[in-house]
Amino acid sequence: MGYELKRDGSDATLKIQGHLDIKTSPEIDKWLGPQLDDVSSLTIDLAQVDFVSSMGLRLLLSLQKRMSKQGSMRVTNTQEQVMDLFDKTGFDQILTLE
Image 1 (tube, rainbow, N blue to C red):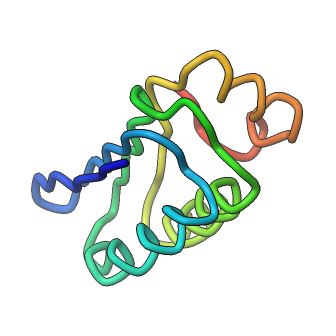
Image 2: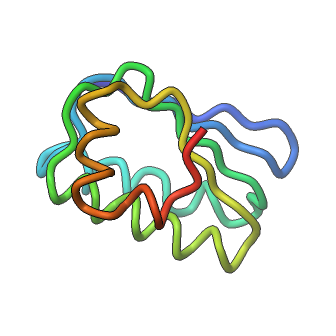
């Protein structure tokens, strides 16, 4: 599991590798929180994420709510099994998926 945030002014891209689950989601949330204060556009790259648990969905929902107040958020490069989860849970209607 790994993650990194790349900034370009007020735009940021969060790249996550591995699982987005009960262990990693709180860790990412705590680490990422203060770094988003002046971000107006957040891209979450899930190209290397092959599993998302309910805690991962909760993190994405929390980030979506925060970024809708600050600007925008989009999720990119979603793998098929994660996209299936988004479809089944209705997250495909909540998140901006590209």
